[in-house]
Amino acid sequence: MSQGIMSRILRRIGILIGTALAVAIAIGAVMFGSDALAKRAENAPPPVAATLATVAVSPVQFEDHYTTTRRFLGQVEATADAVLSFELSGRLADLTVDEGESVAKGAVIARLDTALLEAERLRLAASKDATAAQLTFAETRLKRAEQLLGEGFSSQETLDQARATRDELVSRIAEIDAGLTTVAINIEKSELRTPFDGRVGALDVEIAETVNPGQMILTLIETSDPIVRVGLPLSMTEADLQSVQIETAGAQHDAQLLQLRPDIDPTTRTRTALFALDTDVPLTFGQTATLLIDVTVPAQGAWVTLDALQQGSGSIWTVLVVEDSIVRTAAVEVLFQQSDRAFVQGSFSEGAQLIATGAHRVVPGQQVQISGDGA
Image 1: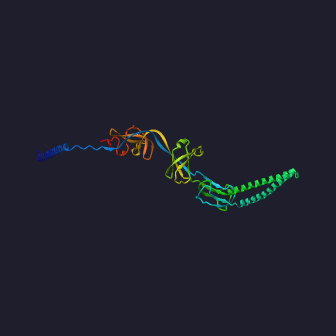
Image 2: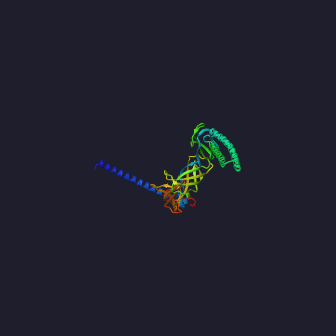
Image 3: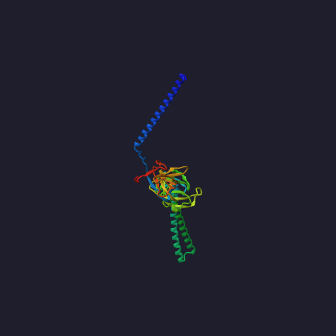
């Protein structure tokens, strides 16, 4: 065998021996390190158990009903809103009020020119005086005719004529008195007086304008004891309206039912209810008012806070309850919601420990401790 071949064989044997030696050293190092890690793990202290989350719970309490508030829109109105006018025609001589002015019952707010009526009254008074003088003379003639007839110096015809003259003058005076009464009534009707306390609304005439009978002079609005008119569904009865409140301009006032009309509005198909407000707050007629009626709805369920509700899959809501220190999910149906709570029916039983607040801090299946249970 040549020397070159022997040299290559020896070199390969040396490489194999070196590789085997390196592998043996590496295996020894790994075994030594594993033993060291095992001994270190044995000497390390045991891990501390994680602290359980603490939750506050409240027992679920079932109720057989809930109360909701129904709202109906209405309008504030005056108890009386009259259009005032004259019964007679004539020239408007005086107008003593302006729009928005307050007036008392019986106050004179407008006058017609009564010059012609005063002249007619003077004429009738003078005619009455003249007729009264004629009546005095007629009564004297009647007495003389009766005396002469008794003495046989006069006829019955003369007596009858004297009596007829007297009766005619009496009737004429009665007719004149009726004319004077008519003139007095017309003079009185030439003054427009307020039928109740209130405030002047719209004015529709000017001084010196000639007005006709029934022509609008002004509107008068009674400001005391405003009422609220509300349209209600036919299902509402007087018993449902005995204890209600009415909200106006953000404030609520007690209200008393005055009338529930028996007829139906042909447009809205509702019944009209009239309410009196118990308030000293000045109201603006025509402003919107809201009738608030508390209605009891029979239903089996429980109240939960809105913070306890969680959105489930689809349209289902859920709440979290604690059973044997484990958080569980209960599906619920929301029947009614208020500002801070909801009335629900669900898959929980009465007395279940509901997580009322902080439900977002835990998840179903998590083990928790209940606040105040001593855990």
